[in-house]
Length: 346
View 1 (tube, rainbow, N blue to C red):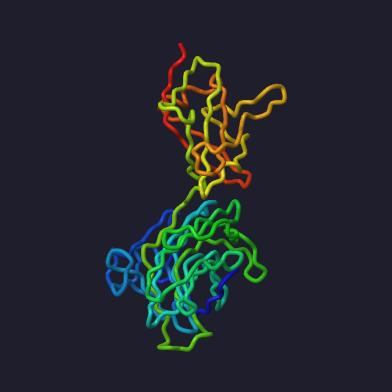
View 2: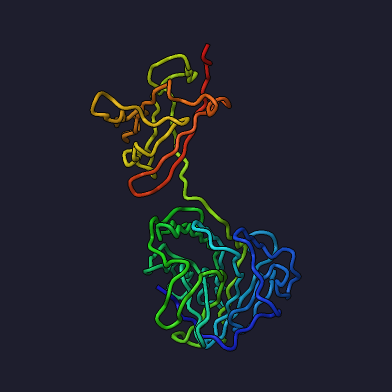
């Protein structure tokens, strides 16, 4: 799913299109009011009406980036990423002016003649009063009040081509289909989504009220993220301290807890090592020693795994921490840890 914004001649303000690393943030506090944030390596994709740092509205600090478009020409500004990590997150706070605003957009953009498609982007719409995300399809995320600040965040996973979406710090959608970061379009050829930015959209379908669409952006950020989920686990459930006696030839139980956002019953036991040892097996059939049980009494089934103590690598346990990691059937990686007390071999 893409958004086509109309633009006039779009050229960078400076001579070269430099790149920023995948980790980037800007609160616009170091830029003089009325000036363009050249030093932060912003570029103009579509000139629209104007863009500059303002102190009329801000989410934090005392300044923000003010964009204003014409009905026939969007105002679009971006930074070019240096590298395309497979896991990438971005965030921005958006305020659509209650008197002169219509819609603000945050995401990836490119240029195709007199149109400017956007990809994997948020749309904060004061006209319809809602927040949506456009990946492969449009996804409604919640209502929006004109003049209010709205913080949007996307955790993009280009390995699975899905995204987790946040609005005002709340996870509102998971595993939303997204567009790849490199692909071929029949009309535009080979595309690379390495231009990320903010936009005040053009609005042909709206009355030309004051000929403006004013939107403020603040606290924008891009960072290389990890899809590894932190989980809770308990070595020797119910035990305290969690003592591992290395001379023992016994079994060490470890519980991985389910929560409202993580289902431990979906873990693939074959992918779960502990200190270099895989899950222990039972008898001649080699059945893995794994069972489901509500260990903590919260009504959710947890996963209890057993490991042969003699197979554990003491070097991975010497810091007093046991780390367990693995993956689910859906490909979600996870990791958890618990404190232990290690009794060495004689």
